[in-house]
Length: 530
Ligand SMILES: Nc1ncnc2c1ncn2[C@@H]1O[C@H](COP(=O)(O)OP(=O)(O)OP(=O)(O)O)[C@@H](O)[C@H]1O
Ligand SMILES: [Zn+2]
Image (tube, rainbow, N blue to C red):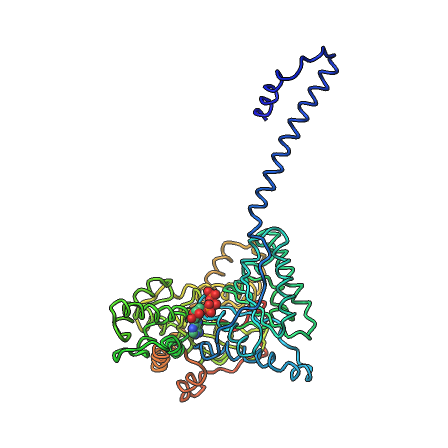
């Protein structure tokens, strides 16, 4: 503004002498000058804004959406994720022969959500589905939708779906779904939410006659908006886990194809040394070994090349996923303790799978699938649950004479259960209804203390039971642990072999007459992990 005024003033002497002006003329002149100055500034501002916009334009120029050219990625190139492959084979069958399914009135899959840690092969699986079914493959990362100007993310989703429909049969792969799929209202990003809404609209818009299947990949299922996983949208969820020892062996086979291996290389041993590594880590390992070999101008990859590569790859992997041998033993006995107690007790659901392949924050887990839905639980059933939860810690104590921090989550669950037993269900040692029903705001110090003691007594009861069971069946505990150390994962057939000679004496009959409502089951609780 200052500069403009100065220019105008300097131009004045060149004008012919001005006639004498009245005060109203002065006023008009003043407004004229100011008006011009203002218009000038305004114009500069507009030019500046236009220039800025133009400068940013190339980024937002509509990107060509066309199917990826797929190199030959088939089922054989993906190893160690057999469960996920089995689920996806169905999708391939559908894409190959949709009529067969439609004739029978079968609802066809619309969306498949692959979730699991990075590098486990989610992208690879989506590509294999496209390749094996001869479908076109459209791939976009969801993070590219939200970096844009208002409304463009939604527009891009529309175009993507339009192209996929036009080129059907096709697979539409959306990587990093979390980028748009986070719960609405979680970050107040209206642009992202608009994009998510558009995605929901497009998925609802499938008429059933189009052979388009949307596959999305996500690292965090919990973060996703529940609307995404409703029927008709991503209603198939496939968990892609890091491979177990046998799986890692197969992944190593895939990634050493075409690489000459020296006599001293034993892939079985390497598979055993790489617990917790993902498919991508193993691909990286094989590649690094080849690089080490090339650098020393070797002819074939040697054991030393793999050792060097392993050191480098493991250093780049999150430390929580690679345990030292002693830690592995502790985790194996901890999980064995959970599994053995669960198997011995009658009221607890049988073990489905035990694993010491790290998964998320958990170093190991025991998975059980409920036999039947039950919403009522007896006191005895709850004590059995506490027994199983403490079985891990008790096993550590018995075998190593010490406990670790690994049982923290188990203890938290025990605290929750015992709290509910005393405060909500009057299942404490005294069984006193009046103590439980007292309003907790007006409860006396004495009642509070008694409740605390009752809670502790319930936890002790579970701990004693766990100790007794584990000491009595110590040999079985060792079998479970050794099995885990060797195979990392034990499934039902292996568990049955270990438990076969145990008469089910320990298995106590339930007491249906005593069932009491327990809030133990949370909404949407699937197989539980401890
Ligand atoms: N199960 C596997 N079998 C063989 N190779 C694998 C496997 N998993 C991963 N890889 C290798 O790792 C690379 C990366 O895998 P991919 O991109 O599919 O992982 P992702 O799960 O999609 O990871 P992100 O979540 O980081 O996108 C693949 O190109 C492949 O070389
Ligand atoms: Zn545990």
